[in-house]
Structures are given as C-alpha cells and as structure tokens.
Length: 449
Ligand SMILES: [Zn+2]
Image (cartoon, rainbow, N blue to C red; front, side, top):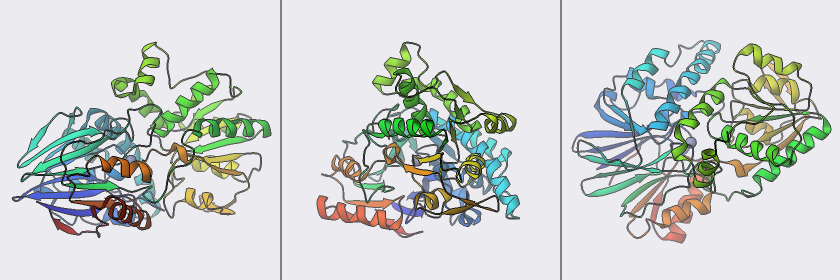
C-alpha cells in the first residue's frame, strides 16, 4: 500500500492524502490551502494526480481546508463516490456554497477566473453519500470506517484497511471537553500507521475550563466601557459553542442583557442544521435539548441574514456583541465591524480560534498597531484578547493521549496539518516519549506502507 501526501504537510490547511493498493486509489480529504488569502495560489494549480483515477474520497469533516477543493476535483474528472457522515455532507453544502461567493469576490479582485461555480458544487453533492459512524464501507481492496473525532459536529476519524494493514487518519481532533459534541473516540483496534494532525502539536491549551469565565469577563468589561465586542469566528461549531455559553451566562444572570448579533448568513444556516443532529450531542447537551430548551438561542439574539440587516447593526448603539466571520479576518462581514471598531479604545476584539500565519487575525493578535482593510489603513486601538480554550483542536497532551491507545501496534506516525515547527515538535515527542517512529512528510512525498 502506498500513501502520498499532497497537502496539509508543513502547513495547517489543504489536507489531501492518497492511498494506493493494487492500482486502486482512494483519497482522504481534499482541502483548500488557506492563509493570507481566502484561497492561496496553490488552489489554482492542477492536481498532481489524475482525478479520474480516484475511486472514492473520504471526508473527515466540513471545514474548508478539508473539503474546499472537491468542486475542482470533480471539474478535473473525478467520477467516484464521496463519503462522510450525514452531518458533514449537510454542512459541506452550506460551506461550499458560501465559499463560492467569497472565492468569486477574491478572484474578481485579483483578476483571476473563479475556482468553481455553484454548478460544480451541485455535481459534488450528487456524488456524496452519508455514512453513520462505524458503518463499514468497501471500495475495491479498501475497507473504511468512521469514528467520532469530536472536533466539530459530524467530524470523523477515518480508519482504512487494505493488504492486511490498517491506517488511521485523524482528520482534526477535538479539544476536550467540547461544549456541545461528543468527545474524541479512542481507537482501540490494532493500527499499523497513523496520520495525525498537529495544529497545536507544540503546546498545551491554557484555561480550557476557564474559557466560559473569560468570555463572561470580556462581555462584562466591554459592556462597562460601553464598547462593541467583536468576535471574529468560524461559522461552524465555534459560533454554536459561543451561543451555547452565552445562553448559559444570560440564563444564569451572569452577564447583562445586551444585543448579540450573529452577522453571518452561513453561521445562521449552519446553526439551523444542528437541530437535525441532536443525536450527535454529548449527554449533557442532549439532556437539555430533550427538555425542549433551545440551547443555541436567547432573548436579545439577532440573526442578520441580509446585507441590509447587517448594516443596521451600525445604528444600534453600543454596548453590543457582534459575532461574524471569517474566523481569521481574511474576508467576510467581520471586516466591516473591524474597520469601524478596531480604532475605538472602548471596544474589544476577542480571538477564539486558530489564526494562521499571514492572516489579518494573526497580525492583530501579534500586536499590529495598524492593519489594512479594504485598501485603508485602520489603527488598532481597541482591546485585543485571546481565549485559546475555545480551540476546536486537541492540544499536545491530548494528541499524545489519543495516540497512546494505538501504541502497542503502531509502526509509524506521520505528522501533518500543522505549521512546520508545530509538526516537528509533535513528531519529536512521539519519538522520544512513545518510542514510535514519526516523521513530518514532505509535500508530494510518497511512502510505501
Ligand atoms: Zn477542522
């Protein structure tokens, strides 16, 4: 069996791996490369393999850096089946349609043709089949099974078997404990090889148990100073986690009632899908949902779907909270709010997720005194806060703990989906502390398993 790494190596985004056995090929993830641009230049390059030769694609979860090149793959002639959980398929439809608009805008600005059209996305969905966790599927010489990755709703770890060997692709693994979804499943089966993510491979999350408290403090401070609290966030999972915690904080009377805007059509639509998959919730959340309580809603919550509604937020006097995408401030409606409130010392911006190198979010987080938004220089005078505990990714101790369950049989671990430094640190730990072979593959490298 051969394994090739076509993306997601030495970088956090662009996951794309191909397995080959006896001339048959399957793929795991087909993600967009993202950084300072919504879509980096590599996304426009032709695939380094023949798309027609791929029999199936297994999708770990619906983040764009795992699904964003599927429409291009279909355009390039892919004729096989796409497999994922049902929730991932539902979310992916919304994510791809939304990204298509952002990509089209970016392409226009850069005088490039758009990466794909709505029609390409419809073609992708026609080839897509939903699976339940642990529902086995066979493709040629391969068998595959999905496990709950605990990263976002519907996220999966993919276990593949062929030629008597087993390989596990972690996809993205979740932080623990996650507010709404189930924890990451441990794989106790005999596994020979593992491809593991390393977004936070070089550090431990601080204050996971304090994240709700930190959010509470940030809201209280901003309300007291009469400013606007901006939360650039991913529409998927993070927005729902914030809603879940704000719901609790309002309910328990821990924060004053102020208007909260979800200024993201995508987040609004994704939140609606959550209701369909309550069976994927963790026990505690499922119990609350069973009582009929809407865990993702509260008085004062306003959903601004249209551009007109979004503009009306400006007319609402602070204090107020605005939750909008994109999560790394490299596009989306958050830019309008940042243009307006970054210069305001009474206001604040909180980061609740990973900020890739080169993104505007990373610049602000790293202390930039000014940033460029819509061709204008915007001074940063508001408070800048970080609540890393909201990360949807496992940290280094959690990644090692997850690997530990497979330790007895593991022959080698491939460390991917992290910045080079982060991947190398995790690989080093695996070698030193677990005495298992580990390496950070090179882009386009092929290894014999
Ligand atoms: Zn992810």
